[in-house]
Image (cartoon, rainbow, N blue to C red; front, side, top):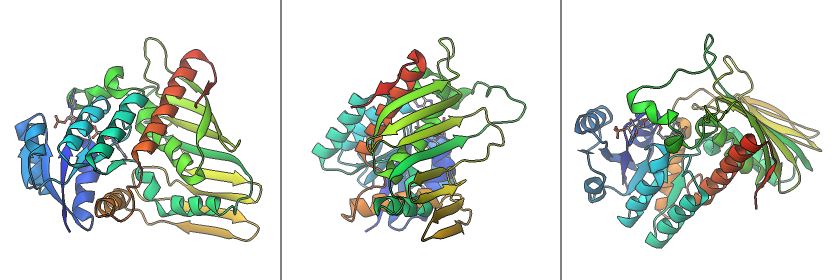
Length: 341
Ligand SMILES: NC(=O)c1ccc[n+]([C@@H]2O[C@H](COP(=O)([O-])OP(=O)(O)OC[C@H]3O[C@@H](n4cnc5c(N)ncnc54)[C@H](OP(=O)(O)O)[C@@H]3O)[C@@H](O)[C@H]2O)c1
């Protein structure tokens, strides 16, 4: 079975990662793309070999060649686009952050469930084989009693104290109502989801410090402390003010050793698995591949639609990430520790 995918919005991520991944995955073809602008839709379709180009979401959703809708619109529009796709009977892979509120996430979960369609969320780091190995070790208890998990995704440009404002099509990233939060929405949310994924535990407490101010509420740099439901602790650093940052990865420490991937957090398959326990010492590197993580994400979605397993990340995973995000924003604003129920 070959599934027809449609892409909503023609931004950088679908252009550089997801359209190539949909084309590279086994069992999917690019059936359509929709943009607000006919010319952009056609140019994208020509570049990536999409069968149809639309400037209207409803028209695209009426296309019988479309089985799966990949929502890559600005964050505040994810809910509306997901609900429309579900109502049209299409499966949905929605980009992170799933939505800006917990209620919106829940409405997307409910809509897809009642339409009988699959819902996946774009947390591609779950498909990294090193992260999957760490999750398996933790799940098997090989690290003993868990104590600390660290996850960092820092970036930046030398000579810049702050990234310059974006122009035109990317301007929504600078609009709090459209993006929801700053660096955490771009990169930190992946760290939080990855920690949940490798640990199999939920975040119950959050404290955060950021460089956000009332006049500039979108943080460019953030540090966060977490407590998980097993009592273990976590730290996250993320931001766009850390040029040449080294340490973009996840590491889990427990009473019997440590396991993680150095430089595995990013937008390419990369990094080195580092496992040290009394029984094992492993150091294994992954060949750099620009789209593998996204191709595997599409593979998982295709398999789920075909009845084999679930998407790499579910709607509930997207909702949990929204809870953590909102707790982070509130903690950074008030200076208080926020508990998540
Ligand atoms: N998982 C990952 O690794 C990853 C990486 C990057 C981004 N993302 C997520 O993917 C989504 C898209 O990110 P991106 O980097 O592709 O964004 P982007 O380059 O800024 O593109 C967003 C696109 O949305 C449309 N758009 C822009 N402003 C709009 C507005 N005001 N109203 C309606 N549509 C508007 C435009 O497409 P048209 O004009 O063609 O409609 C634009 O090209 C975001 O949710 C982001 O968080 C995920």
